[in-house]
Length: 188
Image (cartoon, rainbow, N blue to C red):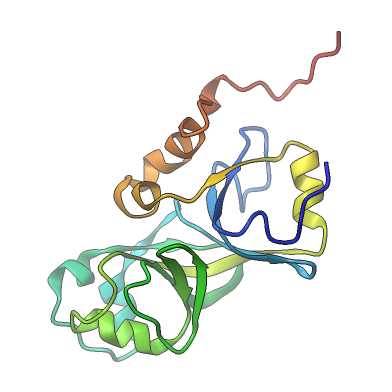
């Protein structure tokens, strides 16, 4: 199977049950960029013991929005663990905004956090610390090895589904029950 350079952008990468890498065990990762140089994404289902309010406080950003303060941040992946990435709808753009797909972007600049803190940010957002990246051809090889499933990104999974249900529900959009998948390949 030949994969084109852009076909994983705006897709959710769903870890197969047998994927043993602890960084990606049972994860769902939004692919934000995919080209001939590699792939970049943000994991969306690993909540941290940190709220958005905790992070804003560390950055000396005052917030007036209690719902923002109480939102849980997620572990976005093993790369750049101290860098914040905000996945959000595209009602606006900020300095470090990368458009992922229709009505979906990721921003890594401080200005979005300042706007979120005062109620001027996007309607829907998810704050992650860290990201995931793959070198040229690496994700394609992992897909050929059946390490991942993919499905289109959805607003519901990204912003409405509880973290602990995102892995099962992402696979469920494909009609797959990940709890019933075997990691053993049979031959006829």
